Image (cartoon, rainbow, N blue to C red):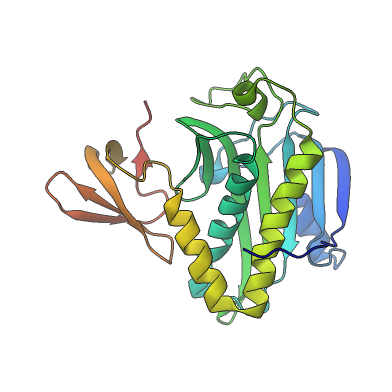
Length: 254
């Protein structure tokens, strides 16, 4: 992918905020946030994750930030592209440091079987287009002890064994995220096709049979596909294809 040589964005740095997504959405409602306005917090007191979960982050150790995008030509049917773009950008930034990272459907970032990052995207829509997208990212960088009941957290420092400069990671994420976004603005079909291919190549549990759970219970299956609208398709031991929307199936972790 070709990235712009220079990225212009405004980063608003806060010591503490309940949620960077909520703070940024309020700025947008008040007309105070241009595109790419980013809110970076040292501490979130009510950070949000997917499924309504909270996000644990030790003050001053990690990256918790949100950026607003105003897509001009992204249709609602292609909303999952933003999830793909964000997840791959974070994944791509992290693999600079070491191997073992992957994207767990729909957009968690994993190192082996441990979670290092999460993404929460909140869209506003009008007609058939997305008019506003607030992209929130939480990434464990230098935290060494996790106190919540989250089953499998890990930080970049725990993985590589040394303190990491957070701003360097942030800049790497920006480079990928905005590079893909600018591609979307200039050539939507190429951007969507390119990122979908990269996303599928680096999915967690891409190969092999693993344990999953749906409303009927646990079952073994392999990851068959992630469709363009975000549905995951699993192939069970009877070679039956099972198609799920977000929250309809969960990965049973080791």
